[in-house]
Image (cartoon, rainbow, N blue to C red; front, side):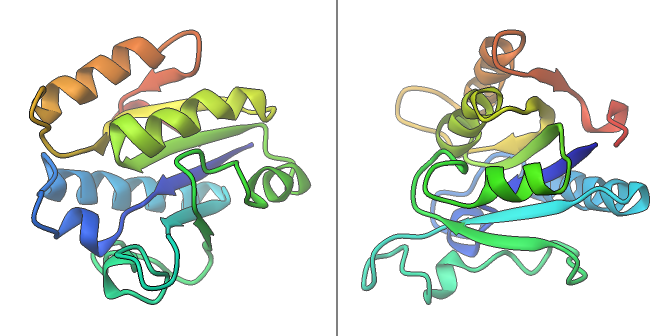
Length: 172
């Protein structure tokens, strides 16, 4: 069984000053993945990246809340993380193992930070990892456009760290 893991789809990242590339398309893709996971009875986990109280990533900040455009139904496990790797200092691996999950389908934000770190760590945590090729994004950086960052990570993570599959081709 595979679980869906959506990373850091937070108000401040999606709607903040550094708009991610293809944000609306990403939301549509994630909502389709949520539907597919529910139809298959797959567990759904959503991570919120938080920081210390009083910081821009304060857990109580409206900027760290999940975006309202995600169609959530209350059957999801929403958890907080403080590191890019969603397995570090969280109960994620234990929860997945307790459910009998063998693999995680990873999507969300930001490609070069939390998506990358979590893909790399999934196998070390005992899971098959699947990165949704069109299911993650980021903002442009001074060095690279977001489109190039996404393409680079899809290419470099594929094989040694995870399988990279388009959302349309994935079945839970």
